Length: 168
Image (cartoon, rainbow, N blue to C red; front, side):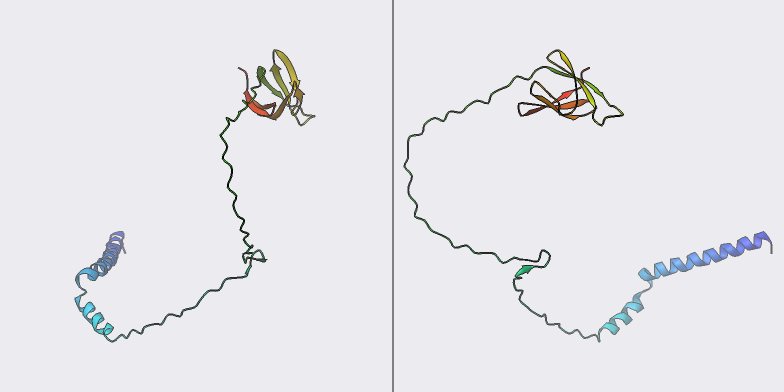
C-alpha cells in the first residue's frame, strides 16, 4: 500500500472515533426521551421501607483510657463561713517607690575571635574607654556577657539585659 492510502485510512478511522464520541455526548441531551419514559416506568414499582432509629443513652466514663486515671470529679465539701464586715478606714496615699535607674556605662562591641583550641570566642569590648578581651560569662565591673552573635552581644548589668551592636 502506498503512503497516501494509509493516510486516508487513518483519517477515516480517526473521524469514525470522534464521530462516535460526539454522538454519545450529544445523545444524552437530544435523543434521550424514550429512555426517560422507560426509566420512570421501572422506578414506579420500587417500595421504600422506613428504618427505625435505635436510641441509647451514654454513661459517664469513670476513667481515662489513655492516661489510665480516674476522671470522676472529686467533690469537696463547701464550708460556709459567716462574713465579717470590714472596717472602712480613710484611704491613705500609698507611697510608691520609684525604681532605681542605674546608669549603664558606655559599651562598644568590636567583634570576636574564634580559636581552634578553645570552644568559646574571645570578645573585644570597650567599657568606659577601657578595652577588654573577655570570654562568655566573664565579669567586668558587675557586667556579664551572656550570648555572642556575629553583629552583637547580650550584656547583663544589675539584673537588666541589653544588646550591644557592633561598633562601626
